[in-house]
Length: 230
Image (cartoon, rainbow, N blue to C red; front, side):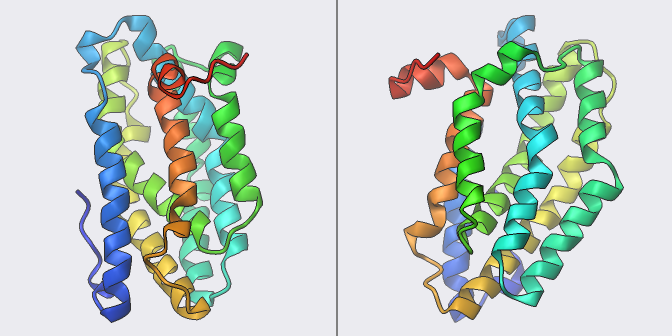
């Protein structure tokens, strides 16, 4: 479970900590559902890497930009802008593409279609620019990605890849990114005088959770939800 920034320990921050603990539990549940890499077929391992790449490569910076556009405080804008600067300056989409190529898991049309509906739902949510909920969603996502990197690296290694720059980098930098985004959330709730413990702030986390579950095991997710769209 990720650590909580000392800056969030205050009467207001205690509610922020509770929300962070909730998002950590969501990540715990997802990570606990992962099959061991050696128990998966080569095609299943390739599929997880490819679907992850299909989602992240073209959408992460877009979603973080949505978080930037949604906030009102200068402190929150500064935190998110630093995150965006690093993503663009260091060409993280290119880093991810190299990772997928080395694992022979470049996304195909089938991979994109497998995540289409859940990905669209996240895009539509971000497009509403809900002032606080997008920041919470991205804080959750950064924390999940950081914890998911060892598993993703294991999948790639079992596919014969030695290209691990993407997983090495995001296994480290996303710790600070997560804490920064929760600090941005704290700034926003203080500015708007909203309740940090409100469940409305978690809408994006739930939408994104469905997408992550589809990335990991699309057939299992669709069976559990009863959704078998085309």
